[in-house]
Structure formats: structure tokens, C-alpha cells
Length: 383
Image 1 (cartoon, rainbow, N blue to C red):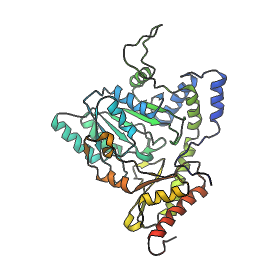
Image 2 (image 1 turned 135 degrees about the horizontal axis):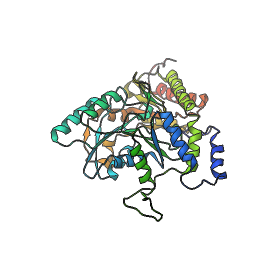
Image 3 (image 1 turned 90 degrees about the horizontal axis):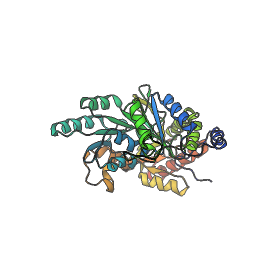
């Protein structure tokens, strides 16, 4: 049997014609008409005014911090339960990340802990320069209390929606809740450009400045002149052509990933000691990845037992993100709370969730998880 991947690229069929157009028109070099069109179409889909297509979601975060004036010695608050790319750009700018624990309701940043930390920062006379809040695994942050807390202290928000394209909060799409928001089109995301990202904002000036910085900050002159340090962060015309084709099938991809989650729910929810990632009423997840939590005392096995059992069948599964405050690279950084994200990491597992999975492949994963439970729990598991 072929390997079952966690989340592999899924082409829609229309991408190739757009890439061929780029070749036939000789727009092979960076930038070109597909970049402009991708930015426009993407902004329209998200429901925001402006977008800049970039080489990665990490590049978008880095530029976002630069645009907000983050400097050496500043503090930037950040969700602790996330991939390291959410926090690394803070260090690029010489700032200090401060990690905020998760809420059990949605696994995202805890609004209560955030409000407490902002109040404490105000008393110390050292407010953070910005907040990076992550829409984890395609589930939106509970944005209303987060935005209220930040507005009270005039702390700007960067919404890290890298995993949440197509998800929503109270009817509005993810990517519309910060001063800036970023998306990723890495190969494992819900749509891909092979590599790439997008920075979006209602502020035209910020997005135009991002484009300037992303193209080596070249001044308007007939010769190469630079008055500030720039970056090589723009998306290529060919990658943008792929992105345009992928965007046209995005709603189908969201629907399929949600169907994948439902098939897992039907096949696994009866198992003792197993929970699936919640979907609070405030948001609609894109179910980028289906995540489960295991209570070893009830399930009879750890998440690592299950991961290894899946690996024996050539099925890829990954532990939930290891919290940033536990990462060696961020040793010494302040953390607010941490017990919730630590527990989610210890017990959480991401199952294969790609939109190109067949029902038979999903059922194979279910079979292995159920068998692992049966082998370790006395008595028959309910069908």
C-alpha cells in the first residue's frame, strides 16, 4: 500500500494551464501578472482590502513585525502552542517573545491570560510592542475578547492565519482580525504554491511598504539605490499561477477536510479516553488537521503508542505542536501559564487529514487507532 501522508499537496487540475500561460508569456522571473491577480483574488476571498504575495508565511510575519516597528529589546506576545515559525521572526528583529498559554475551549491563546499579562505589563510600564495570535490547526482564536484586551492598551495584533485559510469567526473569515494577518502556502497547507505566503491588511500603506521591503527596498531611481535594508521576499509569477488555480478549489478543499474530520469522529468518538479537537460555536474550522487527545489511563495507550502503530503501517502522524516555551531555542523566555498547552502536547496527535485522502485510507487509520485501543483495554470496545 502507498504511504498515507499527514497532509500532502492536492492539485485541482487548473493550475497547469495557468503555469503554462506564465511560460508562454515568458513571465518566468519574479513578479508578473499572475502575482498581481493572485493578490487581488486572494484579498477578495478573505474579505480584506490589500494583499502582498510573499515567499513564505514566515517572511510575511517578519515583514509584519518590521512594519509595526518592533525593535531590539521589545517584547512581543505570542501563542505558545504553535509552530516555531510564529515566534522565530520575533528573534530576527532582536525582540523577546513572551509566550501565552492556550484555552481548553479551542486550544488557541487564552484571552483571560492575555488580559492579565497586558494589565501586568501596563503596571510595569513596559507594554509589548505587538501580539502574534495563531489560529491553530484551522480553528479561529476567540477574537472579540482578544481584540478588546489589545485595544485597551493600544497593542497591535498580527493574526497568524497560516493554518486557517477558509476558516471563520462569527461569519468573518480568518485573516481579518489584526492590524496585519499572514497566511502560508507551504506544501502541507490547505492550498499550496509549493512554497509561499501572503500578508494582508486594510491599511494600503502597510501593504505597499511590505512590497517595497520585500523587493530589496530598491529606491525609485534608474540605478540600483537603497536607503534601507530590504529582503528578497516576493513570490514568483509561476508560484502565483499555481496559487490562483488552488484558490479556485479552496472551498472544495475545506469541505473535504471537514468531511475527513467527520469520518474520524464517526469512527473514533466511541473509544474510551479519546477526544477530538473542539470546534467552539464562535468559529467554523477549516479542519486543516484532525487532532485527537488520548487519556492513557482510559484509552490504554499513549499518543506515542498510537503514532508508532500507525508508522508500522506506513501512515504518517505527528504529535501536537510542542509549545514554544518548552523549546530549547527559547529557553529563558517568559511564559504566562503553560499547563494547558503542555497537556495538549503530551496527549495530542495529528492524524492524516489531506483533502486527497480516500475514505478507504481514512478507514485504515481508524482501524489502527481502534486496534491499538483494543490491544490495551480490557473488554470489547463499542463499535
